[in-house]
Length: 81
Image (cartoon, rainbow, N blue to C red; front, side, top):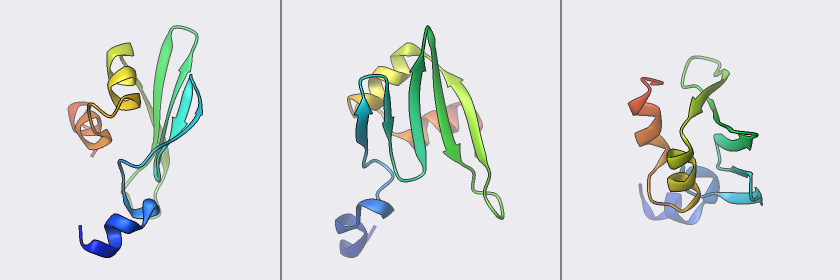
């Protein structure tokens, strides 16, 4: 990532904004807690892109929210690439 990319929050996949305690967003993803379930929604890298979602664990939700793990690692774990 070059210097411009680091200054541009849209291009930083780890940049997140908190919408609530149960939901927050990045430039191409969102994570949401609904009841006892945790869902990661993301725009796929397919031609034209599609909105996809997958269920993640509570631990992954907390790690993402606290910046302890990056979105790409979670996507790779579930074979979402």
